[in-house]
Image 1 (cartoon, rainbow, N blue to C red):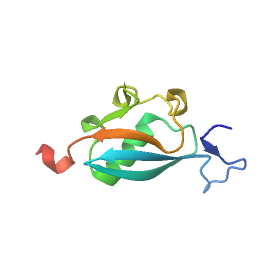
Image 2: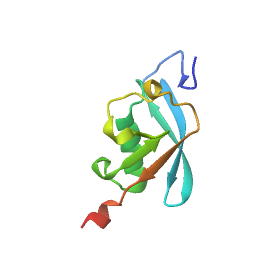
Image 3: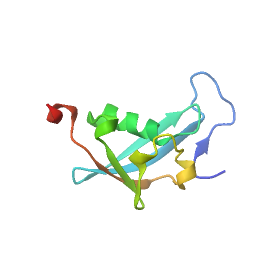
Image 4: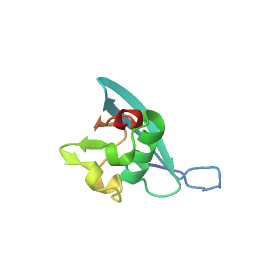
Length: 99
């Protein structure tokens, strides 16, 4: 088993996959946990960031080890060699700033 935490028994209210990620945004580092019933993809991360920071996915720039993640929304984090506590640089303007 890799750094992706996986539950052996899956109930409706138990997420099968979850991962802790560090997000560098606005000179701060935030720790977030992403949970899903299926493999976690970049789009899941983008939606979580939208919930937390009000930056829509089309306004997000995510960089991990030199890879522009926002260009690969359907890629799983596992396929990109993510590990728990990986640091992602996040750049984006909040929704209100687009007006």
